[in-house]
Length: 112
Image 1 (cartoon, rainbow, N blue to C red):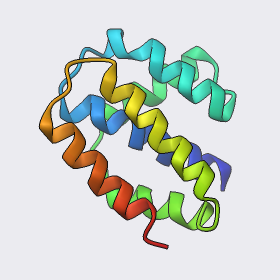
Image 2 (image 1 turned 30 degrees about the vertical axis):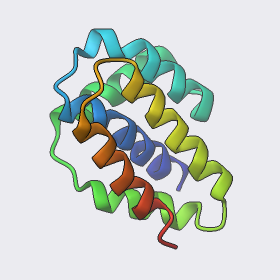
Image 3 (image 1 turned 180 degrees about the vertical axis):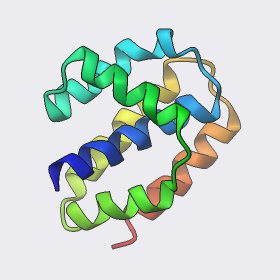
Image 4 (image 1 turned 45 degrees about the vertical axis):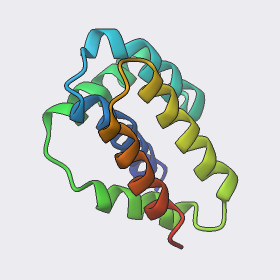
């Protein structure tokens, strides 16, 4: 289950990078730092997660559901994930779409 959560959190964090077409090389250090803090991912593993996440098609709602299932009663961990998303958002130019997406994800994460 931890690998599913790790992948789902990676996709959630990479989602902002993907929808904004951000520079992967510029965003990789922050992404890697966040994945290391949460899951002990080494830089190469985290960078591979980032590259895979932005290249593949995914169902974001499915990954939010996986996180919800694992952390249903753990609001603090969900807030931590949102805080990390915020770090990613602030790491580059902020667009109105970023916060619309943030609010949509926040609502979905706290649906259980």
